[in-house]
Length: 249
Image (cartoon, rainbow, N blue to C red; front, top):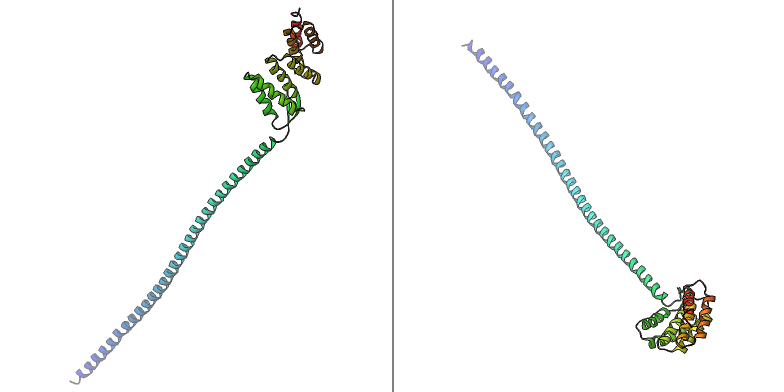
């Protein structure tokens, strides 16, 4: 019995020691799990913070992108407005240019213009060309009475006109067409006297000679033809006068 008691005590001591040894790893495991949990929570917190920061950055980038899109739209609108304004300015400039060109053309109608008519250069007053052309049209249409009146009015109204010698020549023709030999001869004689170097002067003399021939004034006709030959030698009219000279007997 005495021998068993120490054995029982030894066994009990061994159990206590075993229990002590078993309890040490259990405490260590609990400690490691807490640390790991804390580390995970810390990491999760940091991750959540980074995620929030990323979302905030993404929102900022999206806002900036939206603003950039708005600015681009505004820029496109401004460019379109600038193009419209540029087109309007170009249109206005063209209209202004056309307006001044038209105004200049209209004003020129009221200003004397330099023109050369039948070799004579001079200042043509507003209305001269229209008046001369109107009289010429009447003559071409065979309305010799109206043409004579129009040419006569022209000669009186525009004494300094470069059309003056030509108007007198056709006035004489309009009178001749009405068989007014005396009146036509007087007009042509004045033309030759006033404008002896004008291209119409020898033609007027030839017309006078024709008048004289038709009236049987052969001697006067020969003198007129001889004047043409002498004064305007070498011209086509002088050659015609020379031919007629041989026909007047």
